[in-house]
Image (cartoon, rainbow, N blue to C red; front, side):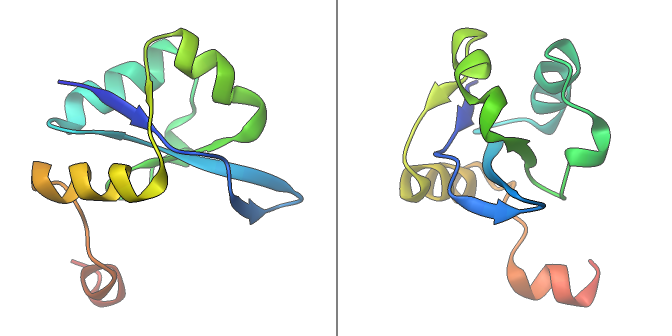
Length: 91
């Protein structure tokens, strides 16, 4: 079980954001986020959005830094990925 974080590349609210995911278990992801002060409002169905200024601290806490393609590949392989179609349909 591994917590993964990609590069903060996604602009919103005047900041850049990264994605924090688990490659196996949402409970593991929620536990890591809670232990590291990431608010539950940052959770978006299969990942947490985390601001750029938290990136280095989360890596120091044990998140594995990967590029965005690797993060998505491992999220899909885990079976935890919520597709765009599922997001649109609300499932």
